[in-house]
Image (cartoon, rainbow, N blue to C red; front, side, top):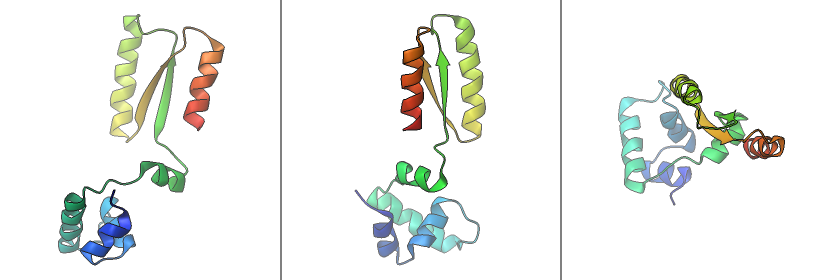
Length: 113
């Protein structure tokens, strides 16, 4: 698995430049951006989301707990939540609890971890 350092080395740029390209920083010259993106494709590089989330102190994950998914009312609500959160860059996770507080706590602990 390629690392950000591998991409930087092959593209002959700094790790910071690769990071700027990945984060769509406007200060990167178009030709540099193109070269870095080409190397990213060649190496099949994918950013480590766990590491990124730790650095940002945010996971961009939202947990929606539902007692059941059999009620169509919840489907409409989930659809709205998912559409709005996706535009903001969040992932939506759904947990079914069957109204069990212990199950709810397990879902919350999973999200925290």
